[in-house]
Image 1 (tube, rainbow, N blue to C red):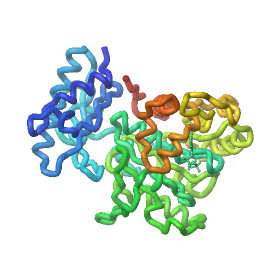
Image 2: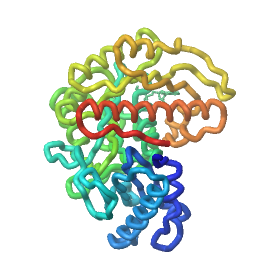
Image 3: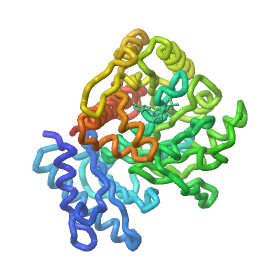
Image 4: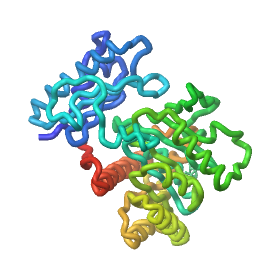
Length: 392
Ligand code: ADP
């Protein structure tokens, strides 16, 4: 038998916190996930918790998880408990077992993880980097990047979102960052933490009303600073929202970061597909594997659930077949998605209760699952880690 995310979450939610109260009741359990016997639990640390307190909580989590694994006769490869501060930064991570360990014997502290401790990689703490690109603007690239990041974070993963659309950053609005200012600590930008995601956007570092006309070296410098001088900590995923088209930022990114792959966003019309094909070809030329194509604005779903095929649904799927790359899913146009984006509440896209909202949530969950699956395959092809299977 294998552990399931649902049962794992139930088990971990009952683990007593420092005050004896179950973690779920104290509201500090952020999520639990299991991939291939590797368990990850995220807990929000209260201000007064020192290392000793966190270590005790991590041991209790590990004991509960080990008991659960034993009952299910399931393999437990590792159990990581990550403590996150109010600002979203990882304060401490405790690992029991690990890639190098064969059993489940408790071993607190840090065990090197393949791909995470490579000093030649500027983002050594990031397990997977996914770029989200599009052939042209306005197709919903930022929307898809944001919802992908939030969807992954809702599965208990630690996720970062880098808004590298340096010519038209829209993330401050879509994330609801409002008047919050970027903070620099010891020469590093501290990411914002909102909707379960660590985020950084150039939109918070420049005058929002000033056009950015950077080319070549300036675009290169802006991107590398945002990517490398942000204190991301350890992340399962970093999602990068690229500028539209095939320009300098994509080139810099491919040269400086070790990407897992790219997602191409497209709308169904023929003219949009032509641009998307160019974007996919650019990633191939840059040796970035294309994880797949997403069809955004696939159809319009009214609040009553009625579906209108405004743009001729299915075009992106055909295009992905033509390109020989996976199709990751389709996201409908809904009024709620636009409203939630404008008011900076992407979490609401996953929790809708009316017909259109439910359909949107389902489409986004399917998109997140497809991306996770393609990342696992791309990682396996690269000969890195074993594929990660999310069991839920
Ligand atoms: P891009 O990054 O490609 O320029 P954006 O993600 O900024 O595009 O989206 C442009 C506008 O369209 C935003 O106002 C966004 O809220 C809206 N939008 C994008 N996708 C959808 C959708 N599926 N349903 C409703 N509105 C959408």
